[in-house]
Image 1 (cartoon, helix red, strand yellow):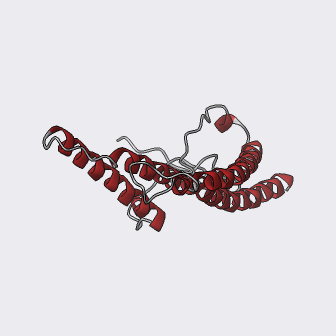
Image 2: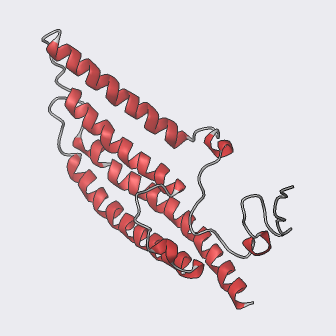
Length: 196
């Protein structure tokens, strides 16, 4: 009679050694579970979804009006561009918080945990600097844009579109600063554990 091989008590059903698992931090975030997938959306996620729905509705109305009613909506293109800029920057903040931005991490994943964590800190510091740069110049662009009116929407100035730069990158910087603090705490834990 065939019997199943014995599994050491320190191993789980997934074959992970739980006796050492607590001393190592994962190299990257794990796949979302059903619990995290069912968490309620944040205000930023709802904002991005509503903005995307508004863009789709405006474009549908513009195409329908132009080709079926022969009466184009003159402000449709400018309105969608305006909303798209704000949506992209709001979406970037959401992606940054979840660390879902595109990254080529094939080499980084093979590095030791301490080196990997140190690189995460370096990347966060670089992003914070870029955010500061974009906020600084975004304010200048916004001031210049406030002197120009969008032709198809004479009640709206270009500056409100450019305002997405300082606002978006300021929020990105705040989120990245929060992630930097977490990464530094994790790095300190890794260093202290490796020293033991």
